[in-house]
Image (cartoon, rainbow, N blue to C red; front, side):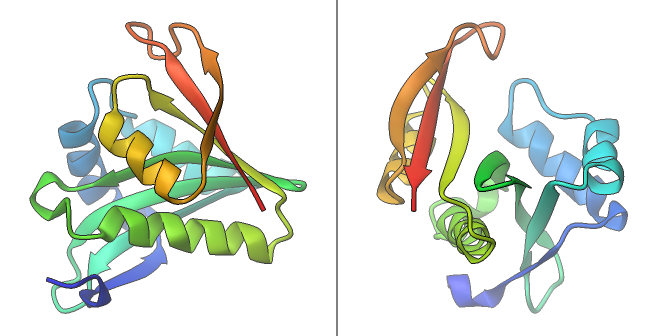
Length: 150
């Protein structure tokens, strides 16, 4: 599969079963359905998208971004394990960064597990750099705070 076979579409409440399935496969402490529902319905700063296989309409990844003033914050990014290492995560991240830049954002922040080297390498590929730590952010582990300036 090529990245071109993936389309980016807005996340909706109808997508939450597929999103939660990927969330549980991807994270030790997954977000709940209620967390996603709150983001989609109540957070006016939130923008969530899906990576969907164009021919099958199956969700293979998702990502979220908050846009507040001239700052952005990547809230989540995950790709189904069966579809990793195919450029989907990069594709979704690039989409969010283009959206942020188009809205006049000057900096985008994110947190990532200290030991998640695969994600950290992805973010560094997009010019994010380490700008701090959040102690015990994940309860069992520190987070690295990363930022990208436009």
